[in-house]
Image 1 (cartoon, rainbow, N blue to C red):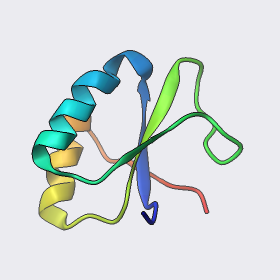
Image 2 (cartoon, rainbow, N blue to C red):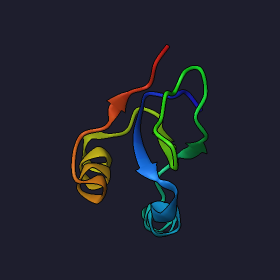
Image 3 (cartoon, one colour):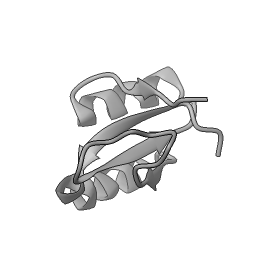
Image 4 (cartoon, rainbow, N blue to C red):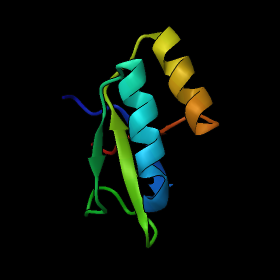
Amino acid sequence: MEKSFYYAVNWSEISYLKEALDAMEVPYSIEQPSERLQLSAGEVAVVFPDLHVRVYNHVRELFSGHGLRYPE
């Protein structure tokens, strides 16, 4: 999967988000903090490829805002 953007979320929110994304059949992966992704303690990244605008709008609503560009 080519990585385009991500959301940093608290680990405690992952179960709910996974259920919602799976129900919407949106492709994603979950990543731990790394050299590329500098996340706060207790956070993980939900990473997405480029999405169709309609699908992105659903994801944006779920996460209450725009995602961050995945670092190259």
